[in-house]
Length: 121
Image: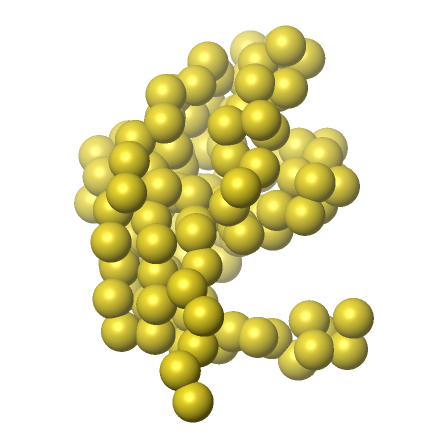
């Protein structure tokens, strides 16, 4: 049985690894991921959200709008507040693959889909 494709966003400074903090990302790499393939669809530019000890609410709203069609966003790090805002729009924040290569990480995530907790919902 073939698994569905997922659209996943990645915060990356170099397009090679998951190495950008959610609040410092200037762009998100958008991938379509199937069980055996990662396809880079586009690069979506955003204004970074985090400005030291406070965040720009207008930048956060723009980021949420920019990646709301994605199933998950992969980041090096994310705070609880932004993670909660992503969860509220149905986007999972994934920091489990921080500083790892993008494509193997996305494929690994896809192979674990659906997670047992998701099947119960």
